[in-house]
Length: 270
Image (cartoon, rainbow, N blue to C red; front, side, top):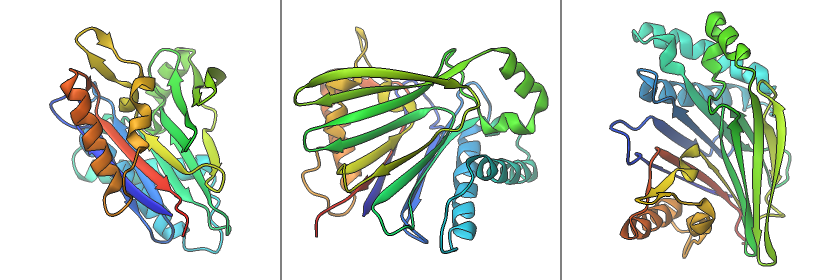
């Protein structure tokens, strides 16, 4: 299992509010967070969420089996992040950020589990094509873990009567199709992928679908497969590929409007 990450600021942003980190102990993992642009201090908040999620993995992942409860893990992370934010003089709103935690299961198989708190993208790929799932909220307002520690804002979010959906685009040699599934806004978003079936797995903030040109939004299917067209997988293979893609798109006047964080799990034959 190989992993790598990439992070870049959005064209319309002055401060990068995404953050991403990864590691291999006690097992390969990638964690990313996307801070809310309209809340103050979320560049710090996204970092706090990532590092607290890493601590959770470090302390709980040392057991023989690691199958964390989605809700319990989220509560542990946000309550500890609240304590740290308070010590730093940051408001609760600084923790208005999505969180994606992905890790290889310790079950002897080539499986990766992904927990999503808020919105984001998951892309699986093979030599024949890819499937990209994008989690969205009906009024474009994700449910943040920070609402758990703020009952008033939690109530206001409930009164918005939103739904959560995962829209999936399948692009293969024999065609292109789209399907969408609707969930309650507070439903768990936990997915497991078998990397003995697919070659690799990308997780990303919603910056992956934020590319624009002077004529307006650019459909991700025009560039998505370029992000995993690795010429070599030595060293920082995702960083090299992503930088090349962004450079080529920039020549065509196409840029990511939102901050972009990407992580990849890649299975290679020995």
